[in-house]
Length: 573
Image (cartoon, rainbow, N blue to C red; front, side, top):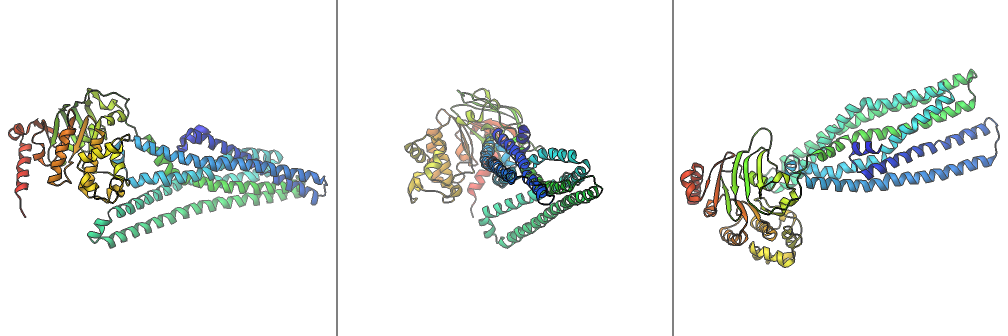
């Protein structure tokens, strides 16, 4: 049972153990709940049939029943709720840790609002099912065979009269399962789409307002909500129909027991006590099955959420062992890569970026330059060939080991809603305040930091909303200064800087890149004219490589880029 729970609902070993314990307590609770039924039968036997017994017999039975019920219900409550809520917290942590280990490629193919819904909403639904439904349903299936066997032994005709309609009422649910799960999945997807649409609207509010699209977006969101409500109504109506039909069979079971019981009583086959006992037993079984049906429907409802968590957990992680990297040449050997199955972005790429040199990648937008940087830093894993760092294939190196020797500054900067000091410290968690401030100075951040209300302690808003694009970029560069890794990757770092700041950054970089492997992309070709080597990329291929002077004569792509750069510089409005 424990292994079934663990695999079926994506819960931890301890969570599955607690859920198994809760199931057995539910089973025992069902058993003790039969005690009041026996007390009622005994009272009927005395008050109606006149078979007098000692009053202390009923008192002792009632007291014992209450004591046992109190103990079992307390244990059941603890195992169902306290342990369940702890498991839900552990499950969220586990999903978050799993997300942290997934390759970046996973996030490029999945909506972020969908992932956040998985962590919050899906886990909440699973939590509710674990605490309210799953143990009760499974406990019922453990209890019912015993109850059914006891009823058959007492009188097989009345036993069958109670069992068959009850089973038919429950079997309707599995028969409708496929349709119900499909409906829940459709509604699940619609809710995800709505969540993504609302998140997109919030994030793009500035663009929506500036292009006067507010009314159109509002109408679109309202339409989505109306469609989702229609689907919700269909889902609920379907569930209501299934439950209604099932409940009808439940009532039939009681009626059938009464009819057959009366016939048997009139023919002298059973006593009045037997008749009353089986009627009460049929009612009790009906009540327990009605509760179990609701739990079963909830188990169907959470299947899309469980499926999403399983999919996330089944995604292959980036493997590798912890490795000491002692030299820092970066070699590409016949590397090919595609973001999807249709189009290759890189085709049989080969080159070397040597330690102590600056290697620049040049080419038109979309040729594959940024993809090369992503592969070096193992944000994505290449499909064919090899990428070697210090002579070791990076696919065999753990991402922790690789990230220790790589600093990355991408064009798109991500900052956190905390202080400037802590945003820079992300580059090196153990850095002192003085080391952070020194990195900020090297990255030319001091001038704008000193103008902020609280200086380095100023909180900068979500993703640095309180800063300009150039200021955000310089904070990102300060992280790289602070980390001081031997391999430095720079992707369009000057894109958001003015000419004066770009010059200051380049002066600082000259200090940073000493003895490092530096790989850089810049559309300002003037800034890479003096690098040690330029790799020219054209349509995912290495067209040529060499110095600026060599490539002007040997590479048509590079010469074309230089000419277009000159035309852009000479353009006037």
